[in-house]
Image (tube, rainbow, N blue to C red):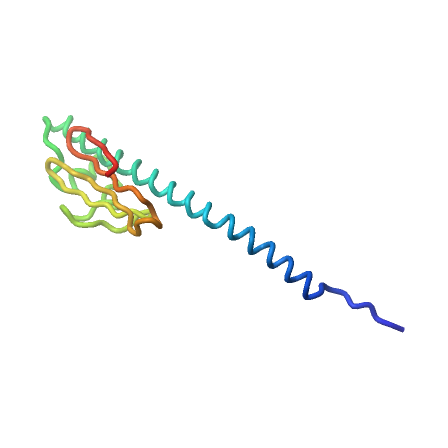
Length: 133
């Protein structure tokens, strides 16, 4: 009596692995680009939120902008997640590093790894100006 071998041949397995490799080569760059775009959108949104908090503070305090993170935190509780001390780089958040300068404020978001986590540096300044650099 002869037993039937069950399973795949080496050629069949190599064909499947090759197809998977081709699909990965197509999909991975698109996934990385989508992630970079998401990081840039998040950085823009976070800066606009910081800017809105600073402008709201100024409106409530006779045109005086927040002078430190504590004053800003009253209007945006998560501000310390993005901003460290005055003019000091904060921790990376979703691929971007934030720097907050208080007083007549300037908030900056730059990619932690340019070309990988993002391509655009954003800046928000006192008076409502917002621009990508």
